Length: 515
Image (cartoon, rainbow, N blue to C red; front, side, top):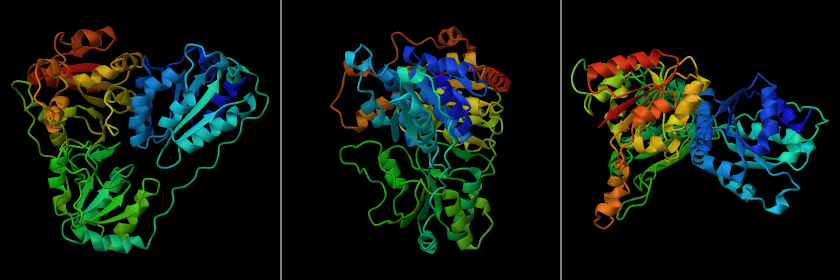
C-alpha cells in the first residue's frame, strides 16, 4: 500500500470518522485513499473556511477531532479564521496539509509559501513528514495531541512524494490517551470560603458547561450563595427551561464592568478572568474589580467536572434552590407582524427539545438569546474567537456529529456572506439545518463600534464601508442557487408554519428575517 493509505488507516484506528476537505493536486493520493475506506466519511467544502468551521462544530458536538484536508499554504491560510475560533473553543482539530514534493520545493513554484511558519501560527503542534517511513507515526502523534484535554489544533504537513510512495511498515497502534491533570485538593476548602463571601462568583468556562456541570454549579450556588457566571461566548453550553441559570458576561466592556462590580471573590474553573474584547479610550481592559480575590481552581487542561464535584462534596449539599432554576413560561405569539419584538418569543417557543443552536447573529442575537433561555433544553454554540463567518459551517459540523438532532443557525447577514458556501454543503449532505438570516443590510455591530472607539465624526464614505446595500443581497435566490429552499416570512403565522416544517425535515432551509 502507499503511504496515503497507511495514514488514513492510522487515523481510522484512532477513531477518526470524518474528513472535511477542500483538496488540491498535492492531496490526490490522500483523496484516493479515503475512497478505499468506507469507515471514514468525506465531506466537501467549497471554501477552506467552511472546512475548518465544520470541523470545529463536529468537535464541539462529538468530543473528538475530525480531519481537515487542505491544499498548501493558501489552503491553510483560507482556513485560518475558523481554525482561530476552534482554538479559542478548545476544539480538537487535525489539519492535513499537502505540500509540494520534497524535491520540487527548491523551484519556488507559484503555490510555494512558508507553510511551516503559517502552520505554527495557528497550531499547538506541527509535524512535517520527511520520508515515507515517518508518516504514520506523525499521524498517530497528531491525533493523540489534538485529542488531549481540553483539545488542541494539530497540523500535519505531507509532501506529495511522501504521500504517494510505497509504505512497507506496520500501522502503529494508537497512543495511550493522557488523562487530565488533577486539581490541587487543598484549594477546595479555600474556594468554598471565597464563594461564601457576599457578591462572590463561580466562573465556569471551557468544556465544563454540560448539563452535569451546570447542575453541580447549581448545588454549589445553593449552598454558598454565589452567582454562576460564564464567558460572553462559549464553545457549548446546555441551557433552557428546568436547568440552573448561568449568567454570561455582557459583550460591551462598560456593561460588563457594571455586571462584575463589587465582586468580592471569584473561583475559576476552565476559564480566566474576563477582559474586554478591544481597548477603548478611557475604558478598562481588565473587567473584575482590582480588589477581587481570585483563585484558579481548575485550568482548561484539568478535569472541571471533578473540580465541581469536589466543591459540591465540600458543601455537603445535594439540592438546587428553586430560584436558581430557569423558568420555562413564555407566551408564544400567534398572530401579527414578524419583527424584532415577536421573533425572540417565537423561536423560543417553537424550538424543539434537544436542538443545537449555532449562534452568530451579532446584534440581532439580542432579540433572541434572552428569550431562548426559556426554551426547551438545548445546546448553544457561540462565536468563541470573534472571527466572523463561523455560524453556517459550524452548523454543518454539528449536524454531521449529531444527525438525529435538529440544528438551528442564527446569523447576521454580513457574517453569513463570509462562508455562504456552507449552504451548498448542507444541501449536498441533506443536513437538517434551519438557517435564520437576520438581514439588516449592514455591519450593524461595526456602526456601534465606530462610536465606541471615539473615532472622529464620519460622513457618507465611511458609512458606505459598513453598509450592505447597493446592491442588496438577494438571500432567496442566493440560497436556492445552492440547493437550499428559502423563505421570507413577514408575519408570525408564516414564520410559524415555515419554521415548524423546516426543523422536522431532513434537509436544510433558509429563512430570511428582514429587520
